[in-house]
Length: 300
Image (tube, rainbow, N blue to C red; front, side, top):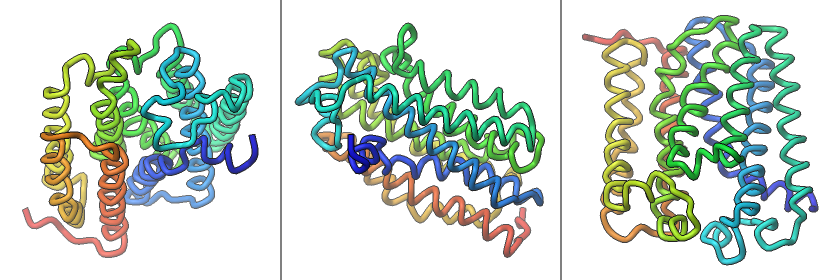
């Protein structure tokens, strides 16, 4: 594979989710008075490599399992050379292993300079990443895909980023990142609702396949609502600054997406959900930056 093909095969547009999760955990630490830009950069690099490895390994196993092939829905909107037989599966697997290696090296260094528990977080994350599509678990095909990505991007990555900065662990970064984790899971759910007929035909029992399209669409709407409720709860519990109300600027878009899913689900359902997730996350993270620069006492 040439450099451009390798880069596009990693699905780089999805890395905004990793950027949001790492930055959220880092900003939570910054609110507590801890911020090292070099450690932040190393954490982000390691997690982007992790995300890229996950995406490529997903392609490897989906092709091996006969899920991804020429004409499959996923091949219609992104580069997927393995599905068309243009790239040997051995090359795909090798690239994924190399990227996981970058993650392991970054994790080892960060654990050495910060907290050895980072190794445990890294190890659990890699196991979840691998068995998302690997035998014998294949979590994605057992209706656990959304739970898996939520656990990693909403809990493990923010917690790890916080630990890198502070050298200690706390539930606060994971709780603060819950809305981001839910939105990452929503992107996958949107993808699975759109592909529900195809996934069912190839034996991939995603959550959408397991509970049916109508129920999955309701879950999509409920989760969107929960994202904003969690922000209000965080502000009332003084975990989040009053500035976090800025995320409600995206609520009209969320309402439109929720309404859209009651009808025909468009082909761009997941990128549109990812767009909402990005805009929400930028405002959410920006609210923490504002809290650091312009602290405002919550009037209740």
